[in-house]
Image (tube, rainbow, N blue to C red; front, side, top):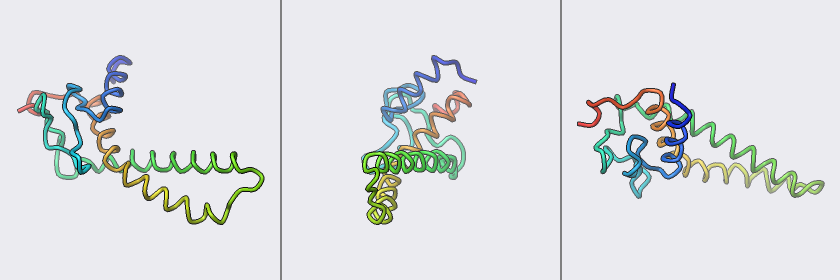
Length: 127
């Protein structure tokens, strides 16, 4: 398992959407897709097969549900006792779908960073 210093350094790189290995190159393209390699250290982002980023679904789902819960709680607390239940019935699912479109690429960066912390980079991935 990584030390606290390594975990904090990787977290900082992840929040900036940078390479979890060197922290210099960007992981995402402008379109939101994953670059094949880091422009600075040549680290290959897709570390195994074509289904490598399937694990990102877990982080995306976790972040989406957490966001949904926070928004729901904030609206209920802010509007209590006149909570707009009818507007929330349609507004929150539409909002969650929009947020999920943003979170899908970000969850891939989170998955990559988590994987690099648990399974450190080897020399073959830099070629």
